[in-house]
Length: 380
Image 1 (cartoon, rainbow, N blue to C red):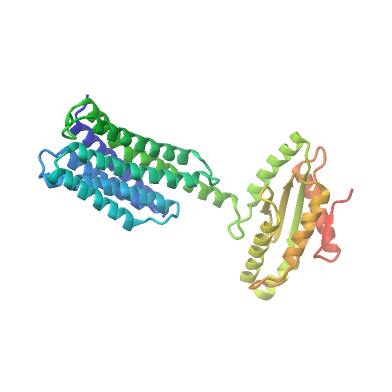
Image 2 (cartoon, helix red, strand yellow):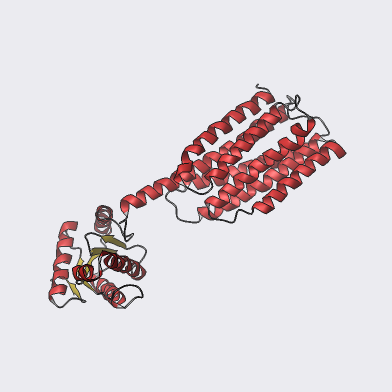
């Protein structure tokens, strides 16, 4: 079985590895990474101080080591709170670290007790771990690209808290059998091994969450139109194929709206491309306020957009189209007045999406020929 000194040194090296990995992710600019890196640096220092406690002055081996390790945990919590855009509460945590250091000094100089020091350190770690779990729990309730990193981190924080509570119980139930972190007793080696893995395990959860955010950003960039935020043409056609298959399997209706901005070229020519861009952005923003969360809005051409309406028949699709037309025709501050023409088509048996698009496009053409700023549906 490895000695406590070996365990501390291995943990310090693991923290260095985590620090180097986090250093790579810093260029992403995601909040919390710098704090997690600092936490691993502090933990590395604390583990080295613990490992050579017998060779160091008591002040470094007890107060400084415990204070630095507490600071590492506190900074780890700050990282999680910043990652989730929560107030970091640095002053409160700094006060808690100071209180922990004073308590460790009390159980060193006033009432020398390894049990006392171990209990106050573990209670501090319980508080930090529970705070991390509570912070992550808020994120679990929000729709994410992947839930696993958040579930992992939440469970790991609870495991860390449970481990420290067990340590508190063991030290309360024994009478001075353990006198040093470096003592090779079974309980001591167990808690040392488990405790030194806590921060690297939480860091792994943090890295997975950062990776999830980076993938979500990359997917958003690939699937969304850079100007309006609507689905890109490629992504829209991909989800359309999925919805088409689902509609056929469930024998439910599927409708498609095609609309474009009337006289858009004239807007660009008269007012410039910046004004035209504002019109497109405004059209998408207001359209998204009209349609449901389950509907899909895509930009399929310069000023042409498509709205896919799952489980929607022709009558309801026409009602949505009319609401959309009326909403976009209302003047908005900072945007030139504009209108849209809309064509509506309903999925038929044996349709491909290209055929559905063709009929919606024909209906859009009829709306334009009929004077624009109107809704037309496909011919029977």
